[in-house]
Image (spheres, rainbow, N blue to C red):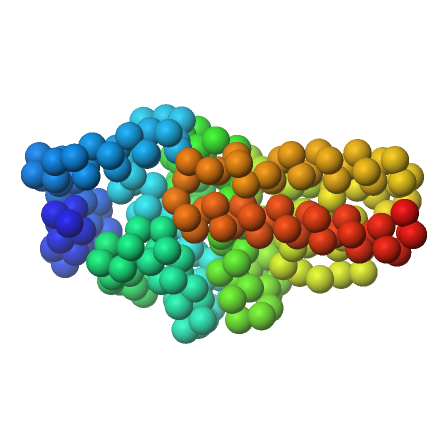
Length: 246
């Protein structure tokens, strides 16, 4: 609780930099006075991330990336803001999400943020599976109004490059949100002219890559996102099976 109060106060005096400083100071107070809850949160966070990064750092950077996607087409849509809010409520609870969203709302309206700088900071600290889930989350924001614009696609591709996500993985996740004639094949990362055996092999590989168990240590929202990707892979394979009468 102290960290979000510190972030809000810091933002009011020194903008985004002040928010980060206030967040760090507040985190220290939470650690001192939060007792077992703070310790449990820290243990869970260490299980989720590979490097030396605090939960607050990750949340602020994730919000910053979300703000870049939201502003990509020059519009701040209510559906996108609502999606982010609901996501954080599921991940961190209503009280914490309310404080997070207030800071987030200020950031997207007043600050220019560097996607490259953010990604260079979080990339070595996150596993590849978590980076894939971050991209999935950002695509879901863009698609919250039922359409991913070209400007949003370009921004998401740029972020994926900074996160060092393979192009095929980017195209696979994009195909889960952007429909096309061959999107089932794109989701499975396989050519439309591939043999049935190659299709089956690709399905097994993708099912393994996106299996929800890979993110079972993460928050509920991340687990739900992993399940959504896994379901899309299954649906793509079933569509190809039906089309080919496999």
